[in-house]
Length: 472
Image (cartoon, rainbow, N blue to C red; front, side, top):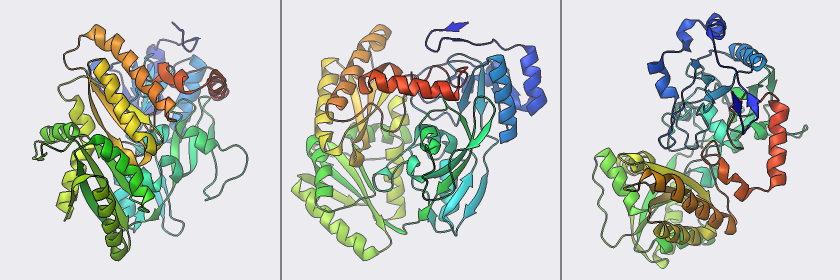
């Protein structure tokens, strides 16, 4: 069948193809039953479902290379899939074909304490890696909300960030080298296991954030840093969300360097508390929160930073600043924060937009978003990484009918993205473009830019078999 957006024809799988895959992987790792395919037909993106013809679970690079070589020759499309926690639809098999999963490739192959490096397979869970290196006094900072389940391969595909990206950077800042299987079945290493790299084009950074459209990552060489042994967590409440947004820039202008600075609307915390079935009291006058963490290795330095933070927050009309006194209180606040996305979509259809602007423009982004939402009679839940200007906007369907949701809401999203761009930002900070944002990408990028990206895709994947229908 012909697919207009990629202008390619994909083969419908038959018994001969299934037999080939079973000979490579054994039947146990070739999934064809409809009931078993269901969980691979969707990810965490809205309520979208696309069934693959087959799911393959390879165990090593060689098997992946053989599969890709065969699929390329047969014009069978392949969609790489991590843990399915993505929010842009990048792991959805929109044209059927093969879904390639990485549950079996979940080994931490090496932790090099002398060079502060780790080598992992793509199926390693982010938090599992964090805990392993932490035991050795090392730190892998990128910590997306789904860190307890998301795979490192998916983190690479989307250049995942998380709250601590504010101080420590995103996934891109910790990847030194990648082993990648190309759509042709050829295997390359993209760089070198060194802190510096200036040897031609940087393919490592090209693969990071490419959403599985250029190659399949099979090994990841990561940079690690020393683990900060001390942290204080503050919860600052505000009577005005605009004051909370303005306070973010004031914190940095005042000389503070928090590791985390999260903006949370009270509704977001309320939904998370209901979802988790825990108590979280919200005073009537509170209209916004900042969740702020200061970390390091010197308790005295952290204490002085907190004192400075208190002064700045009070100057910015903060209602109250609470200090999480112990590990249990910190865990409680973090669990609430990391559950907001799941809580927002419980018993409701929603769209999550991943807007990002220079942080000084955060007040204008928040105020403009609420104005646009009111214009379209939409309820929104706003929260996110205020310190780096990354505001997640959950738009709830509530009682709107399908026609309104599928048509008018798109216009609202378009206006929000246009606002972001007018403020010097863009349409995605860490969730990627994937399937659901690709129609908006021309708002952010020129046709020249998009054409260059299409040509890069064509060089890597001339038969357009790898994750088709994404980004463009």
